[in-house]
Length: 442
Image (cartoon, rainbow, N blue to C red; front, side):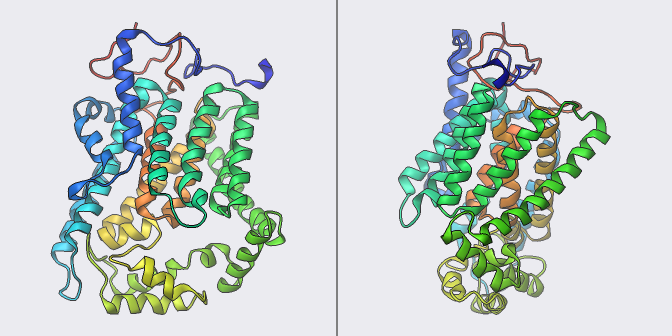
C-alpha cells in the first residue's frame, strides 16, 4: 500500500531492485564497483599479511582518491590514521628488550589499519557509482562468504553469520522502501540476536529500529545546528533509556533463560553493571595502561610480566573463567584486548586513542545526520549504531571493516547534507553528486 512505503526523495527516486536496468555504457563500472565491495567484505589473508581487501583498495586508487576530498571528515580521518600508523611503528622500533616483536603480526596489524583507511575511500567511490544499499548488499555478501569458509565451533550464527546477514537484510529491505519490510527486517535481526545470545546485536538492532521509526514519523524535521543538537540530545536520552530498559528486561527473563542467567551473573561480578561484567577485558587493559600509558607498539608481543599485570586486573572482576580466557585469547601470540579503543592504544599509543575518539565523533555525526535526513537508508542507522558499540567492546580485526562501511556509507559531502541514491537499478537519476572520473551520466 502507498501509505506503507517511504517517499522517494532526491536520493532514491525511481529506486528498486527490480527496476529497469541502467544504461549499458555505465554497466561495466557498476559491475566493477559491486565486485570491489564483495571482495572488500571478503576477508581472506594472503601472503605477506595482506588481505583481498588490501588488493582491491590499492588497485582502485586512481578512481577513488579524487572522490575522498569531497567528503566531510575524510581529511581528519586520513591524518589521524596515518599519524597513528607512524607513531605505532615508532613505538615498535623503540620497544623494550623484554618484549618480542612478531614480524608477521607487525605487517598484519599495520596492513589492517591501512586497509581500513583506504577501504573508507573505495566505499565512498562505490556508493557514488551504485548507491548505498547495493554497497551494503555487496559488502554483506563478501562478509557472508568469509563466514562460510571460516565458520566452526559453537554458536556459529552468533560469531560468524549474524552481522553479515543483518547488513544484507537491512540493505535489501531499505531498497524496497517498504516500511513493513524494514520493520520486519529489524524484528528478525533483533529476535535472532536474542535467541542466539547475541545481546549486543539484538540491542543495537532494536535501538536502530526505534530511531528509524521515530525519524520516519516525525512531522517536523530538524534543520540547522540547533535542530541537529536536539536530535543528538534525543539520541543520547534514547540510548541511555534503552540500556536500562533492556538490562532490566534481560535480567527478568524476557529474552529467555540463557540470557537471564548470563545477565545476572555479569551483574554479580561487577556490582550491578552489565557492561563491565560482560566485558571484563577492560579491567586488565586499565592495569596495562597504568604501567605503560604510551602503549606498546604494532606487532609487540606481551611479556610474562605484562600478562601477569593484566591478570591481576582481570582477577578483580571475579569472573571464574577469566584466566583461561586470557591465556587462550587475550594474550595468545599478541595483545587482543577485545576493544577497538584498547587495541588501538596498545598498538599505536596516544595516537591510537586519538584515532578512536575521532572515529567515535565521526560515527555520532553520521548517526545524527541519518536521523535528520529521512532519505538516508536504514542500513546506515544500524551500522553507525553497531560500530559505536564496537569501538568500546569489539575486537579490532572484525570491527574495523564494519566501521569503514559505516563511515563510507554515512559521511556527507562538504558543506551540505548530500542525499545519495539508494539503489543502482533506477530509471531516473536525479542526484546532483559529482560523477567519478571516467563516468558520465545521461
